[in-house]
Image 1: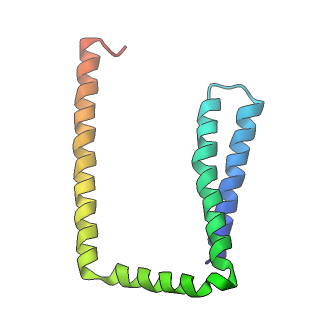
Image 2: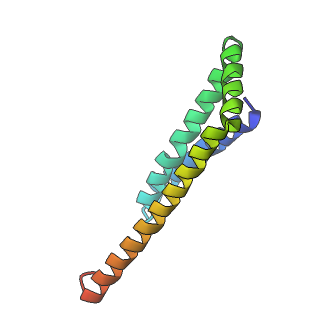
Length: 116
C-alpha cells in the first residue's frame, strides 16, 4: 500500500483526537457535533491505518497483489462498467426525487405553521 494511505489515516485520527479534546475541555453548543466528528473521522482513520499495517506485511504481499489484479480487471470489464453507470444514474435520480419531495413537505409544513 502507499504511504499516503498511512498518513491520511494518521491525520484523520489526530483530527478526531483534537475534536474530542475540544469537545471535552470547552462546553459549547458545538460539543455534540465535535463528538460526532470524533467518531465519524476517527474510526475510518483507524481502519485505514489497520489496512495499511495488514497489507504492508510481507506474508500478505501475494494476496494483496492478487486483490490489486482483480480490481484492475473489474474496473475494465464492460458489463460491470455498464452496471456501475446504471446504478449511479438510479442513485442520482432517487436522491433528486427524494430531495424534491422532502423540500415540498417542509415547505408545506412551514406554510401550515407546523414548523416555526
